[in-house]
Amino acid sequence: MHAVANNEKKRPPIRHLLRALRSRNYRLFVAGQSVSLVGTWMQMVAMSWLVYRLTGSAMLLGIVGFISQIPTLLISPVAGVLADRWDRRRLLIATQTLAMLQAACLALVVLTGIVQVWQIILLSLILGIVSAFDIPIRQSFVVEMVEHREDLGNAIALNSSMVNGARLIGPSIAGLLVASVGEGICFILNAISYLAVIVALASMHIPPALHRQRSRRPILQELHEGFLYAYEFGPIRSILLLLALVSLMGMPYSVLVPVFAKEILHGGAHTFGFLMAAAGSGAMVGTLYLASRQSVLGLGRVIVTATIFFAVGIATFALSSHFILSLMALAVTGFGGMTLVASCNTVLQTILDEDKRGRVMSFFTVAFLGVTPFGSLGAGSMAGIIGPRGTLLLGSVGCLVGAAVFARYLPQIREQVRPIYLRMGIIQEVANGMESAAEQPPLPEDFSSEK
Image (cartoon, rainbow, N blue to C red; front, top):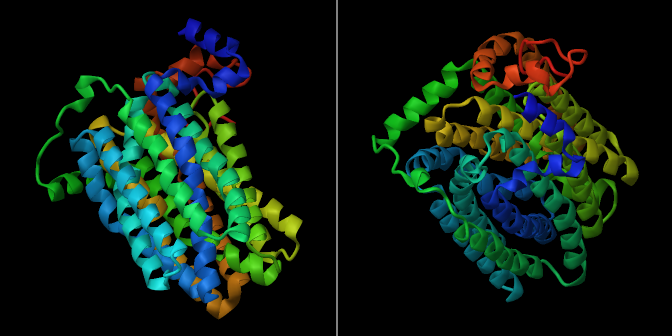
């Protein structure tokens, strides 16, 4: 264990940040997903602008967001059962292929000039259904791509870095393309980008042992078993509840960004693209910070701090009437939001039982994305009643309350997580020299004790 610790210290910083890439399958995933995610963000920005251009309605922005995300709430738990039963790689190839076809259909209706709002809503619903299967399966598949379990936290952080690198690049490209040639080209490029991740998945070599057929008890029985496991284990329950609250009250801020870009900052598609890119740049910084961490110790405190940053960023953006300040506020929002989500993901992946991984990650997906449509719909509705600024300020207060409650329960979470980290050797690893005695006590009390 001393040798492992010394090797970690001797690693060059860049290699340490990218250590999960030593797994071949994960390298393939990163290569394919990096291309695909740029296309995904281009489509998201172009879709929002298209809806607002056609209707000029914040309410319809909320409705489209609701329609595209509500399937996650209803379908993801079933997808979690399938992820615990079947070959996750083949399931992902199927979902990515369907998403590619959805993007192609969207491009067709836009470029032929026959696009109507009902078509956008229908295609958003289709993509929502596909994503409801894709996301929990993909989350639970990460552990199969990473050969070295100690690299799991780094892999999750790198995955978030990919999302936010694409979030930085995609909206900027989309803003330029929408302003110059229209939304349709963004949808075409997104459809093409799916080929990269499909080829990457097809090229992976997964050990035969991981292709075993999972149990075939009734789906409802397995769902009930997974729910009881997540509900009765305090750390999982606390993380999922905090994430659900933030997703309901805070994450829908993105639905109102087009309104702020046009009505408050008096800009256009370029302004919208830069605002989204600012949030992406902040999120990228957050994921690089998480990737640089050598241990999951301390993530409890990181979760609380990240939630506070997220809430403060939203409040500042809500009150700002200046473009530069709005960019800075969204950068802080992006940092806090993605650091929170990635930290929660890492802790969950570390402490849950392998045979329930798919189901727990489906609950994570529901908490992160499944409740967001209600927030999107509520944000669109509230913006028409109390205005977009009041809506975001209300959401910010809700996130701060959630951070305070989670911080209060950290001692109880500590006591339940500690035995797992002792069994996995995480605490002993620190004690044997991962960090100096001056920086850490010989046996840290919990995953919230590291600063």
